[in-house]
Image (cartoon, rainbow, N blue to C red; front, side, top):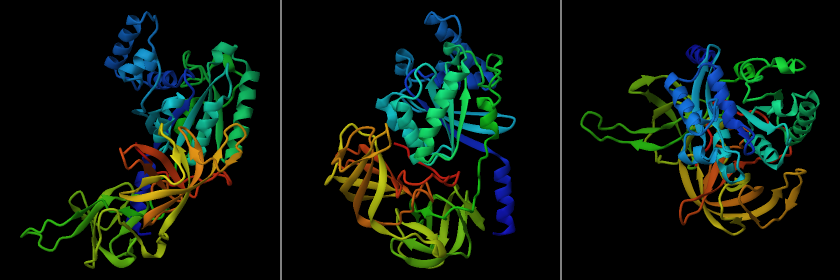
Length: 446
């Protein structure tokens, strides 16, 4: 690694950013927790707080309903539930945050998949009165499949169980055992009351038996890796630039976002799936020539040889090229209302390439209660998690999801109307403990 790259990597690592998502069942208090987090960390503007106070008074509430800080859709405010993923950006003196507040209703599990697909940490809420329920297990399974490195179990509404240590301990023990079996690498359990503010930003005097961090303290101190060069370098081509102007008669550039790793001028690369090799002759970043670029920068690569490269091709280092395949074995989260069946013709979207495909087999479906595999279900319905084998019409340079969240993930799409059917993770299963992928990898957006 060059000294320039080392310096740039050190600069980015010093500017810590944590992407995290919240999840949990309906009425577990996710939006209230997020609102409390924003309010107590002084991350709410005065006019926002005034609008929330006015809306709360109009609904007959004496205290401001902090959940309204994130429930932005009219339907969400009317029904008192979260429907869409609400993204919030805030910062403390110690760290910057991108927060995805995801829905808890089973019907909107697909939105939880979207929000958690880029997260480095997931906060899963549990109502202390109800304990671990099916949706809790589903969210834990999704976090495990998405290989989220850190999971926080927030046992909420402790004020409604008299702040009992035994209630918290039994819920934490049950969830941790379940998550460990899924392969979740780390679980941190925190007893909270989002409504009263206990252990959210400030430690709770009512739970002096708890000696761990508050939610914000954990978010500020959890280790986050920003290794720019440790991932397998991948560059999906989004657009071919050929101005063919008098000023640039021979210019041919390949534009896109670096999905993982870093690229350098002079490096030998291979274009997949064709397998042709060449070298990087130049890198343009924001109109300037640079010697090195890394994820998630959007750049234009210039190649030394005039070879056939088009949208959907992936440029990779020749010494670290993935194998191409037409047979994709993966675990999928089914997110559509219509089922996914064996023999069904679909479109498979992988990075910037979309190809025709057919579902060859659905070997098993996960049973959330005991994590057993139900063999040969024949089809998957909404919110099912199962193994699939898909045959594509064209070869794809697909990594294992364990190595790259971006180039190891894909979507299955209904060719008739463009509906997203399932989100897939190549090579994933619950057979082995999860390994944290690169922190700067991207995920899905439905």
